[in-house]
Length: 231
Ligand SMILES: [Zn+2]
Image (cartoon, rainbow, N blue to C red; front, side, top):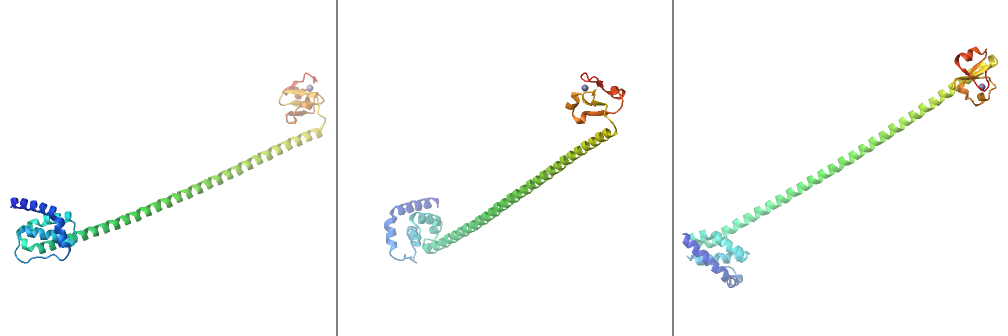
């Protein structure tokens, strides 16, 4: 059996080389299939012709004949039916391949749509984040502005309080002056006391002045006497 198959493959190879003229022979009209008993060699030639008539090229037809060779060995007279069955199988396989390709294309399109949706979602998330950051920045700026306003208010209040204190001191000095004649003037800063007419008094800051209306003993208790006016 194996020996016979090897012999037939050798025949097919020989036919393959011989085929151009054979193909020309069948190109003109329909292939004649004999109903009577035929040899395996004749069956192989007819099968090649049938495949090429169907549209297969020499290489493809040769491969198909190899595939159906076991059947041709058993029933060479059924070559037409064997080739027809093989062509149906071929078509079925082709259709299955096309369906698989279509399904794959569909899946690829679905995947692409999914990826596009994901990209859009990511874009929206980024936009939302940017919006949130902008809102946070605005809130921060508003807080800074409020803080500045508060600081300005505190500074204004402090200035007001300082002015009120100065007015009070001036009022107190005025009251003291109204009570009587100033006899001595002490300097809070230097710790020295003077006569009111001393040249140092003119240079003294008002807020450092302490006024005395009585005798020398009171200023002398807290201050040292000036060495210019010698009080
Ligand atoms: Zn003095």
